[in-house]
Length: 143
Ligand code: HEC
Image 1 (cartoon, rainbow, N blue to C red):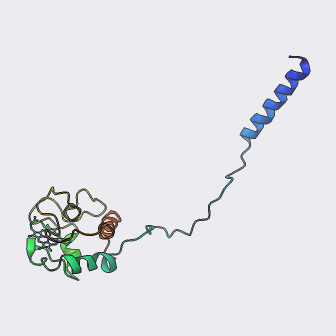
Image 2 (image 1 turned 90 degrees about the vertical axis):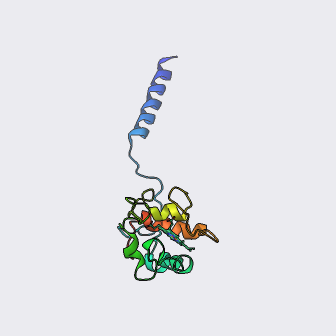
Image 3 (image 1 turned 60 degrees about the horizontal axis):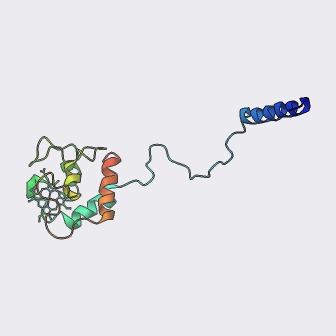
């Protein structure tokens, strides 16, 4: 390679290095809807989404079964951070912790804690299970 060739090679290398070092910022800035701090993307609401499932599919037996009242105005206080009647020291619902929430094991049919819920008839639908799952994972709020 002659002198000019080497100079060109060095020149090109410099250009390439300069290109790498130059901070051009992000090429693409995605347009996303504003996120409300502390608000999950798809909030699950206890009053309007979880309670209606209990009304339709659980209230017929709760109360009185297992000392659990899933009726309106009772269900929240009877579930969240409350020790199970049949499977103590397991708690019925641990906010943010699906694995340690008895309610989740019952409705998702893990079979690890006695009868699955409901014990007869149709299991909860995929959508209903998703609501209960989201609600527990999002901190089991009284919302
Ligand atoms: C046909 C009656 C019946 C229906 C309907 C029913 N349950 Fe139950 N449930 C029971 C009985 C009986 C037990 C106690 C035996 C057991 O836990 O295995 C129980 C226990 C439970 C427990 C455990 C309580 C504890 O403290 O140990 C939970 C949680 C529960 N049910 C939730 C539900 C939910 C949620 C639904 C609706 C999806 C539901 N159940 C529907 C009869 C029913």
